[in-house]
Image (cartoon, rainbow, N blue to C red; front, side):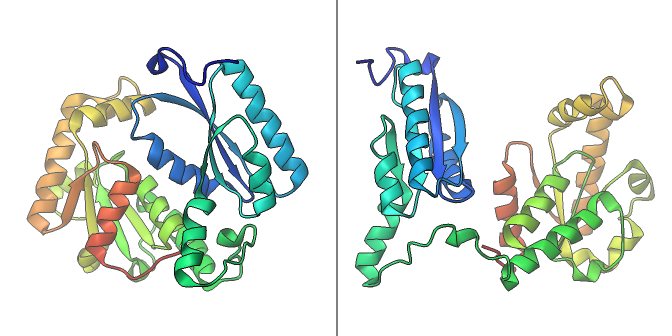
Length: 282
């Protein structure tokens, strides 16, 4: 029988399966949080909609095939609600991390109430107010991306500003998709620095503005991926824009942070703390 772990695990790529009766997003999100604690490489495979015994047996087959090919146990993060399906998958050769068994069963004992054990319940919200708010927020963020429109800015929960490629767009969309936050974003450009003022359309909403900055050397790397060798991506120009943007935000009393070494999730969390909105879209 193959050894469960390689003799030099740091040099091998371990396979991880995210097995779910729904989209697999919950299992993958939790699994990513755990895996980032280890300085190893992982090959990640999502297996969504495992909602019948036949699909569960097929999942076991694929997990076992991976075990035979790699010579070490795959890691399996599971959010299978039905005990029958979970029981089937647990017979595979994987190392299992069952989120339902770990968290739901102890809560049943503590609360004195049985869970519904309903497949896909966490994402069955298409008719809910929270879901509709989230879709509305996504549409708002797309319509107000990169300074496209000044219309209805009074409805914005937050307006992100910063130089081009500082992380405004992905942060806006993450806030909309995960929390139902209506986030607009506007680039600060050389013309703004020459005037020494914020874009005119943003002035009435300064209380809603939150700034993102970025280290010039990192900005150069990002911009060179888009426009290699251009003045736009030149380090000297990036230093100028970042310096001027930060001076403007300080002068205008705008709350801001550097996105250089932070993930989108970290940036979004800090913004949520600052704007103190009660909106949540789970």
